[in-house]
Length: 414
Image (spheres, rainbow, N blue to C red):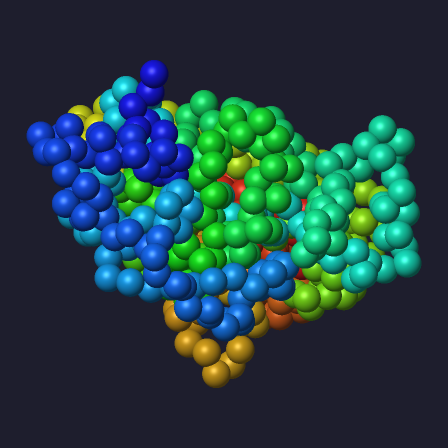
C-alpha cells in the first residue's frame, strides 16, 4: 500500500495523515499537537465574487481565512501550520522523485484542458450540439453538465484522454482552477471518470490563499518540482510564474471567443471543426512531447551536472529548453511596437530573448529575421532584398507556445 505522502498533495484520509506525522515524531497526540487547525466548528465567511473569470460564475464559493494554511479540499476542513506544510512539501516531493521518478503537474481547466459555456448562452448555430451524441458527429468530447445549480456544455480539448494517461506516468497530477469547487469537481469527473489520474487532487478558488491569484503554497510539493500548464501566467503569483508553461487558449464556443474579443469569423463549434482540424495536429500532443523532454532532462544526471535529485529545480530545465528554441538567431522588429513604447521593454522583445535569440533595432548582415507589421516598411524591403526571413509577429507567439521554431512561410508579412 502506498504511504500517505505518495497520495499527496490531496490527502483523502486525514486520520492517516495524522498517523503518519505522529509516527515521524514519535508522538501520541491529537490534531492540535501536530500543528493542525480544526475548522469544523468555525463558520466560514462568505466572500464576494472577486472578478474571477467567466467560468467562475458557475456558482458562488466560500472563502475563509485563519492563521496557518487551511486546506479546504482535505476532508474535515483541517488547516496545517507552516512547519507541517514544509515537512509535507519535502517528504512528498522526495518520495515522488526517488521512489516513483515523478514530478508534479498542475493543470488549469478552462481554456487549457476544456472550454465551457452556459446552455442559454449558445448561439443558434451551436444548438445542434444539444442533440448530437458522441457517435453521430465528428466532434469528440462534447458533454452537457446538468445539475441543480448548473446547466453547462463543456468541450474537452482534442487529444485530452491520451494526454492525461501518458502524462500521469511521469507526473503526479492536480487540477487548480479559479472556478468554484462544485464546477471543478464536475469537470474532474469528465476528465477522469474513474478518479485514477487526479485521485481527488482538485484545488478550487476557495482553497487558494490569494483572493484573485493562484499560488503553489496550497500544493503539498516543493515549488522546484512542479510544472504548471495554464493559459495565463498572470493568474499566478510572481514567485510561481517561472513554473508555468503558458498554453494558447482553447476557444470552442462563440461565447468564449466573444469574451476575449475574438469576434472575427466563426468559432470551431459553428464551423463543426476543431483545433486539430485547423492546425493539422492536436496541441496537447505537442505539449505531451515537451513534458516528456522536461522529465527526461530533469532525471538525467548528465544534463543537470550531477546535482542530487532532490536539489534539482525543474524551473531551470524550463529555462534551458526555452533558450534553445531560437538560439543563435538575431531578430529585428519593424513598426511592431507603439511609438511611445521603448522596444526592449515590450513583451514581444522579452519573449524573443527568453527563446534564446538576440534582438536589435538596426539591420546588419548578422540579422536572420525581420518581424514586421507589414511588408512595405524600409526594413521589410531590406529583408526581401538580402534574403532574410520576413515574418509577422504571430510567428513569435506561435513559436513561444509550441516551444519549437515554426516554419516562416506559414507567417507571411502582407
